[in-house]
Length: 441
Image (cartoon, rainbow, N blue to C red):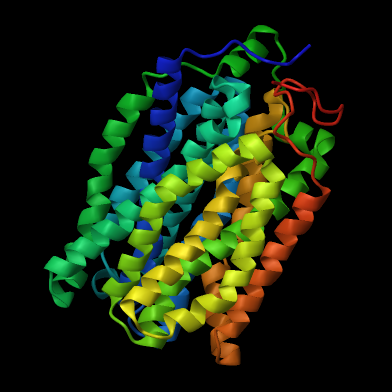
């Protein structure tokens, strides 16, 4: 027994990859659009009656609500994905995210409806989180379960490329509008346009997703009558170790990413005193590099293994975090861009193999629930609070050095998880993770 499954035709696999990439790009565009707006817009429009630092903290707190919702989305849609299929769930999550994002664009500000504005903002962010919580697992599994066993790292990494693509689109949309509009016009109504654009993009994404085939491995499970009634319960009973490994491995990746992107915008504008466009440009350039870097590191993990590539990225991210803020503090646009590009390179080395690594920890009938929960729970403890923790640390200690220590501590946790985890690249997707490794090559 090799544990291989019939190869999906190349043309069909490409269609699956495109569907996953486009869908995740749109979902992350919506999610990052909110996070970016929280750093430069929402603090002024929804929390105007507090100090700038407090307003930014409150804006990021509403952003964190989305991270809190993501595990719930992972539970709900992970259950549906293991019970009803990957494809159907991916259509649902894209619709949910798109509707919530368009409604954010139409939301009255504090000046119009008072305290109801930030409350409604938090509710819509929660709905965004639900959609994203179910999105990642399905997008990864569709590419992982359709493709060749020898290219699982590369194939599943394309779903990860949706993150920088979405970040690129979000930062680009706000950056262009900020450049062509005056500050007053942008704050008055210009910031709403990227949120409305999401509605049109979602329609395109839905059309693509509705045309792809269901995962062949899920189809096999369905035909064999091997579906589990309560997937999450079974994950907790059968795979608690794998769930903890997935969470710990992801936390450092998430903290590093949101520190290098979202919090850096606050640091560049608030502490360094440079204009918003400098930080947005740096994130744009870094995200553009990640479009190539993430699949490259995913492919390297097929050749050298998930853990070595992942660990190299974690070590590099921890080390670079101590150079990152001094470089930003120079105020030089070129140096700031270089600092962010290198930071996102270290993140790509972790993020490229991450999708395959986490998904390969779980058996097919539980893979959607297990992978989603491991990934999304870590999001709450990682990226969800990273900007808030960073702002609080600088406020308490008066130096960004404390933020670097925080990033280092989190990537050490990731390294510990990788040290105790098995190498998953040789594992059969049909083999129960607790039984042992059966080669799939």
